[in-house]
Length: 197
Image (cartoon, rainbow, N blue to C red; front, side):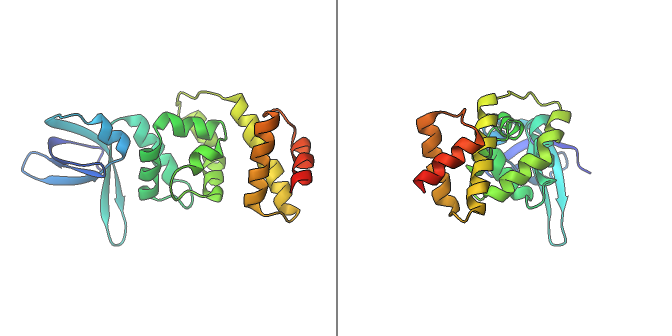
């Protein structure tokens, strides 16, 4: 496996870079916007890499630091998230944002990434919550966010089970939380929602 590549930065754009190593070999390495923003106008660059081999392709992904590579590897371990989607997530959100969203079960932040739906966001949180803790990321706990999300998710699931459309139920719950605060119990949320739906 290719652990890292160090070489002259020949080409740089938001999606990939080309590094030329000794011997004149140029490597095309896919990167996130996070890595792109950290690459200044350096002549020599060292990127940590992750090498993906498929039947029809061999692709290198590059990362400026170890925390981003670790998170990338955790993300691609989730069913339904491939390397390109993981790169999109790391381009839309910082490593810290993703880690905090997972630790605090903040599905809304994860779903804010283009192409990530509710089910995928839930899988990311469920499958990675414990792994994030073990990987020794610096997690900023947000109790407000955790309570808000857990209660809202449970209330929304109950309303959908009762036959209400997800979109309208979610809008009503958001309005209730906005008007009454985030400390309502699941039961209170459901009762208030049933009056408005």
